[in-house]
Image 1 (cartoon, helix red, strand yellow):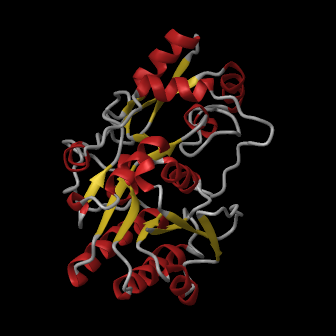
Image 2 (cartoon, rainbow, N blue to C red):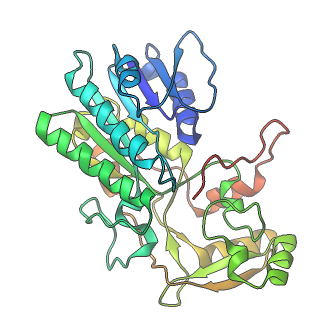
Length: 326
C-alpha cells in the first residue's frame, strides 16, 4: 500500500500521516507526501515529492505506483490560484488515477462550504442529499466543483472514490482563538469588527466570548469537527467496501451552539459573553450515514472541544500561524 497524500504539511495531512503510521492495521503502508510550500521530513516509510498539483507532469510522477490517494490540498479565498490548484489539480489527479494500473481508492476531503454552511437556511438536518449551494467567493465554488467532479468521475469510469465532507476543522487551541476579539482571531467572523473598538479591546483583554445569534435571534448552531475525528474517519474509509462512490458528512454529533458555549465558559472559567446579532442561519449536519456505513464515531463533544482548546499550552517552537487567508 502506497498512499499519496496531497496537502501533506497541512493540519489534516500531518495528523493523518501520524495516525496512519501509528495504526497497526496499516503497518506495511508507505506514504508519499506531496508538499508545496512547507517542508516535511522523510523517513523509511515517508517519501516526499515537492511541487504543485496544478503541474500535470508532477502529478504523473507523484502517482506512479500509488494505490491510494488522500486528497487534502486546497486553496482558500485566493482567486489567482484557486482554479489552477483546486479544480485543475483535482482533474489531473483523477486523470492519472483512472489510467493507473496500481490505483485502488481515491479519498477526497471536502467541506461544508459546498452546501453553504451557515449562509443559507436549512429547515431540517443537512444530509448528503442536500443540494450544492456555494456562498459568495471562490473557495465555496471550488468545493462544489470538487465534489461534482469526483462524483462524475466515479460514474464515468467506475472509480472507487469517496468524499468525506467536513465542516470547520479544529485542533490544539483553534477553538479558543475562533472566539477571540483580538487580532489573533482564528477564522471568521472577525469579532473585533462587529463591536466598537474600545469594547473589542476590553473583550480581548478580559477573555469575553461572542454569543453569536442567527437570523431568527436564537444562539447560532454551527458545525465543527476535531482533526482527530476527521483522521479516524479517513482511516475507517480506507479500503472499506461500503465507502465506494459515497459521500459522508464527518462532523460532531451536534453542532456547536454559541449559547451553550457561552454558558459553559461562564460556568467553567468565569468568562463573560456578549451578544452578536447576525444574518447567518443555524444548521445541523447529520453524520449518521458515516456512523452506519463506516462504523465511525466522533470522540469530541462540545465540552471536550472547549476544554481541550483552553487547556492546550503551546511550546515556543509551536507558534500560532495562519497559513492561508479567508
